[in-house]
Image 1 (cartoon, rainbow, N blue to C red):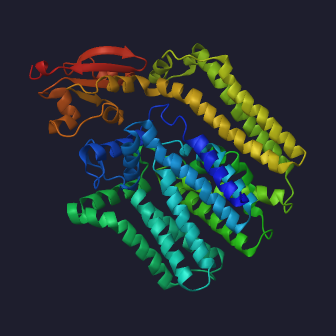
Image 2 (cartoon, one colour):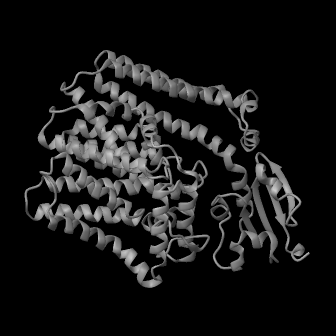
Image 3 (tube, rainbow, N blue to C red):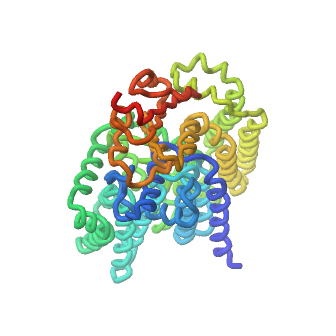
Length: 547
């Protein structure tokens, strides 16, 4: 078998083995995972695939492409957690293959494999491909658009060059259909920044810019245009208002300090982030093509990091496009060391060992701490959190072996680095991180999810098929997705105030957090059903309406 074909199969198999298994082991997390899965579910239930809906009302925050992909998965495998997350698992496999192919094309097979394994074995990049959020698909489209733009500018003038500009626009258009016009904004900033980096020597011509913009407009207009034509300008107006609010205010409690994304990327993308730092300063040790692509990745990193550090709303998701340049720069560093173009810095060995050891210690200590919650609860001031921790979950000392095993392989990696067996050391470092994440998510994350919100989900699921209303008295989408709310029925059923005060036509069930229960106890003719592990459950019967 050809070595290149073998490597392609290897990265796909690794991705499949680490991204797909056990996707449905844990419930979807609020807010984003359940929110997006609910939009896909409502598309299926209502048969309305052209409008995004939440609670069967138009939802202007996101365009539909990702939800179309989720509904395809749900049609194939049912409405469940596995289907909601499978889109990103497949996206992860494609991402590993794409970065391998680009690394192979610009450098060699070693670089391609190093880039793929850096993506696979870094904490947040790995985790995102096992989630049901939009960003992995969104980021892949943007990265592809930047890559084709870089290829176009590196090409001689002719049809091939123009076609690459068009491909860049198509990819950005698909990104706009996935999450919104910020994708085009990022591309524009990248072009401007790259032009500045090359001292105004390299830039697309006006005709080529028109090709990109035209492709973006045609692809994204396939839906935005039809939506406006059929439903008027309402969606576009509300969508633009929402995007402006995200940029200008700390929306949804996500206002954080300027340095937020710097910290998230440095520690969340370990080990790649630590290995990437030196690549910002590696100059003149590669071909012109390699230097040019490194410049593009550096530009992409700084554009995304600065842009989303400036905007007021900050979440971990917003800087996730930086995973591409970070893992590339880490792979570039490793490749330079393996090929002898760069000496290994022993201080980096210490940094990797210190932070990796800290992570291993936290993972090993976590189940032990959870076995002795009484030692930490006196220091927790949040009544809701303390109540959630009382849920009986079985933990064991044996679970500390996940962290201990990670520490052992980390020590092996450090020993291999000391012996200058760099290839083996890098493989051990990243694969151990990937396997550790897999075991952590398989064993500990389901228990953590049960503690944080398993009770309400069980309650909503127990009400499925009953002729009743289910409503949360705190922000969540779990009451829609796990109750499997149907379309139609009394239009007032969307209104929480009516469910609490109005002449309801069937029983209504409510869930609230224990720290807010005083706002509902003894009011609204509510019957308290139970108070359990941080949540209080109520019922209101139609017979009491009007009393």
